[in-house]
Length: 489
Ligand code: UD1
Ligand code: CA
Image 1 (cartoon, rainbow, N blue to C red):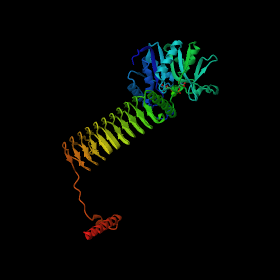
Image 2 (cartoon, rainbow, N blue to C red):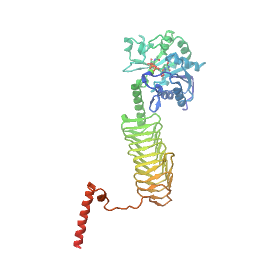
Image 3 (tube, rainbow, N blue to C red):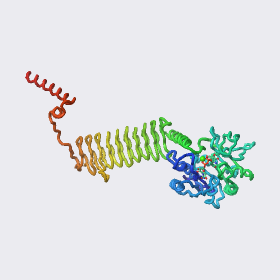
Image 4 (tube, rainbow, N blue to C red):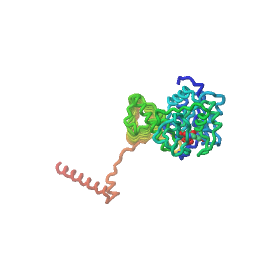
């Protein structure tokens, strides 16, 4: 991002809460939507504002949360909240890392993941243009239950915020909620937090109490209603988690549609925030495009396909497949029913076909593994064809070994390549071969003994069975034909 740092802006991200309502051993802010933890979305929107400082407050599962935040945004300063609970206390402690800062403090909740940078800059603009000391983001929602409500006076000015648990029947009727996102003047915030107590239903220091305190001090309190109310919603339980994931996915799918991808069924297509689709990509129903997957122009993905951290080349076709950390070349075909595990590389015009599993293998340009095969720890050159049922036996119970197959090799059906083994360029193998020794270039490798027929074996060893009876009938019929031919001759 080319924009300049805003020296008058600091951001505090609240991430210390336990998230009891999630009923989870995973801290709430680390639950994921769109392939990124909730707090990751918040950090992304925040850092794009180019603030002078970003502080995150942690407490519950402190190391885990702090570790995740540092990995997502290394520049963020981590502050620990003490045993005093509440969003007010969290902000108060964060301010200790902002000593001397006199600008605007944007407070974001780690569990409100859908607000985009544009909505946050609009809030900051409102705060600055109105010279307010507090500007809060509100939203009018159909079901305000659980949220703090924004209470306004007769003139329409914000008076205070009341939490769900402290609200009387009348206040609970209010449909305008507090999004948990605010801009404060730093000085005023420090002063008012000192006056916030814990005399409320939850016995916590509420950040929201600053609103009433600022107003009582005669300062200007502004509120901006979110234009997209769904983006202002928080995640407190798993129902809301799924709703947020859906909202985010709708947004991502729509943006790729507008960028030129055909998404046949948006309802059953899930695309993570980090994935990238080129123009003229087609995505068929029931498809998940996850993590940092990239899909090049003209490729067709799906139906029923999951790609995680994959790279798909131009005009490739990937049908009913599951692939992770795989590279699929231009014009290559994958599936139906293929399983590409980590480290699979399929060259241009190649094929990984039906009921084929691959792992840690390089399959060269124009090479095909069309049916019923396992290819692991293998190097395959160009224009190779493996027959149906090829198996690379890469594991000897202790170590994994590599199979190396040269260019232009044609392997017969039902081959086992017992690694470590090398097949030279242009070599061929017979059907059913078990290849235990290297095959020189251009050789034909046969490992199956010549076929031997033991005449009459079934009638002799399995008398009385259906097989014996059938064999007897066939022999009698043949003998009758032979007898007639003798007479005729
Ligand atoms: C809060 C607001 C409520 C608003 C809602 C919007 C308060 C008192 N209430 O309620 O008005 O409608 O968000 O989503 O602020 N946290 C800490 N330390 C704590 C407690 C919480 O860092 O001691 C963090 C949490 O990790 C979370 C955020 O603050 O990211 C909000 O906390 P939560 O307990 O979810 O507040 P709500 O009840 O949702
Ligand atoms: Ca919340």
